[in-house]
Image (cartoon, rainbow, N blue to C red; front, side, top):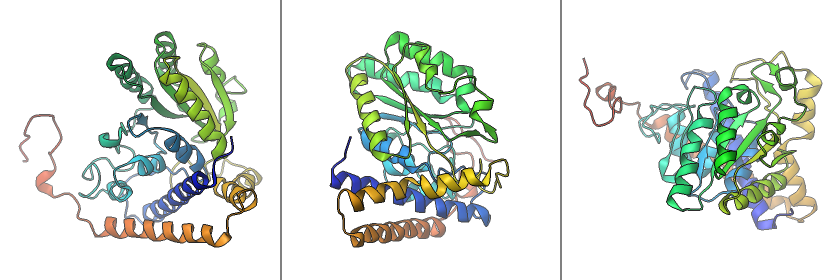
Length: 327
């Protein structure tokens, strides 16, 4: 599917924002400003931008631990997401969520958590709610090739297929589960065959091709809205960094990394389409890049200048509908 020039420019802008957003996160995680671990999706921007672009705001989204980009794009305001990662009170979850636990119910970002495979179960709830309430909202759940090894994935696909729940399984295959190649952990040559075992339509596609991603998600969403059930989409992509920010990733061959960084960069691929097929003036793309650089720097300034949560609020949100005494 060939996107219009206007839509291509929009998703290119989205991908540039994600790239610069995560480069800032990487820098401030390295210098100790951001607490805890962060997991980056640099190199995987088309998967996130494409999925979000193809969905409605009322569709449910379950990000994974590498989901900063999707969260920032679909959210109330990306600067609130960055402030959350910086653990500031102005963050979307008041600094309680950090990098891996950001949720934004206004845009139906249902959040992630540290239990691998858990969202494969909870996504069944929102999908069933759509059926029960008679809406056409679909549920998109992100998972990695490593997560696919969890038993919850079997349970989720079995129930979704049996009940024809409106779920899009966005399987982001970046080649590695921490340091293990996916071929060393799964007997299948193509992981999308997991879905085929449950008679779920399943497709493998180039996760760095923004047009292919959007087309596949739109088709999956369309059949889900018609009551035809779930779809599995295996996006073949690559993370440029290690498993977490600071991981030297010595387990990866240099020529493999070089190929994906230099030849399969989703931003370069999209930019080439805009320049060659759509005949966009290079100055227009340079302006987009400069505007998003400024945009991300404004988010950074907001995050750095925001206050941390006060000690007097340390127990706030610990329990629902209960006050907890701070001792």
